[in-house]
Image (cartoon, rainbow, N blue to C red; front, side, top):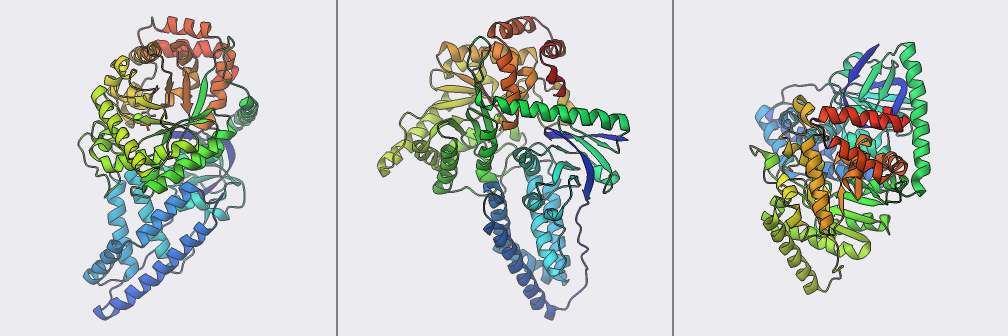
Length: 581
Ligand code: PEP
Ligand code: MG
């Protein structure tokens, strides 16, 4: 038995035989050619390119539900690469320079581009490296007349074990048969992670070398709740997990029974439980989990996947789709949070010394008023198609907020000038994710209609701990007394100014934090859709008085460890299912 720990990205337990997909390395011949053969090699390349374009177009024609919005954008970005004249020029130039067959030149270009991106240490850029490999593999398979291994061909139930998954693998994989996903590479923000959560497939990524010692048909347990993969389990472990799996499924079923019920405490306080989404396709899962609305739509994903700024009409279509699909529930769309760790080569440059403290989110938008206003006009126009709220990320103080609101007014004036309708009273809110905004939340609360606390960034900035750095992950503590005090300050400032306050950082979906947040006075929780029923179950079992008493006790404690121990015991006494988290 071998237990490997990775990054948990999608919850649930999967047990079954492994189907291992080793990295697909087409073996590429390399031989010299004469100058006279170059036109022939270019011709071969163009023929392979035409076939690759055709493959993608056929996939795109499949349409919904197989090819949703996100899949379509990925495939569009691959088409863009295939049709990119710079890429074709680069290939011809290298062909002439090296005088080698086109396959070896293509592999050389792929390696040099992809390696640069993959070694950047940046999740987003690593994903772009994968896109390059994906497109190159597609071209090579046509040049070499070799069939690509296809995950759609998997016809038995199994836990998919792979080095890494290419975006096109995920699009084509047989979702009925793949009960779990384990990969060597990948993190929480990778395409695989986002899709696994959206398709509700338990997944553990970032396992380093799982493909090195798992063989096809090995028995595997994948524990997406703890981030573990157990290879070749002994009988006792297997028995234990079969029971846990059944308990988890029962728990999930019970939770879905809560869909029609409200998130109301035993003493009658009604909370809003909403969902975070990255792509419009996720609304099916949001509705299936009984969300009261969308508390955070990370709109930057509309920009990241196609690697360009979509125009106003394209944005409008995406926003309308979400608003109409969620009606009459509310949808909070956050304006662009690009920059920082989310760079787009050629559109938003990376390379800053401290990108997380750098030119990102609203700072970027304020310096690019045309880009910003195009998004704001699209949002305002969408406001007549549903119940929209607009939210600004990374606001650090009053002046920045004022400049942002001025640009919003300009966008409104432009629409008035065009005679295009919008909701004059669309609620405007801000994320509280920079400590200076939290400390001035009494001032900021007078200018907006709501707050949403972004604990992912707020904690990283408060404790000065990079949220992506595994070596200091032990310092990333949501129950740090400083964090809890700051949340309390923000909630109190919001309430004394008569505005509601929500939370859309990961802490909002942590079952152990649910009662604390209730006691601190939070009004709205927003999280991955799959987390909603659990938080609802907890909220429906307690009273505000109990939650306030718990908060009163832990606010006297000195350290997060002390708080953590106390809260775990407190929750353990009341909720038998909590040990599964
Ligand atoms: C946050 O910072 O808590 C948040 C929700 O935003 P993101 O995770 O997109 O930075
Ligand atoms: Mg943030």
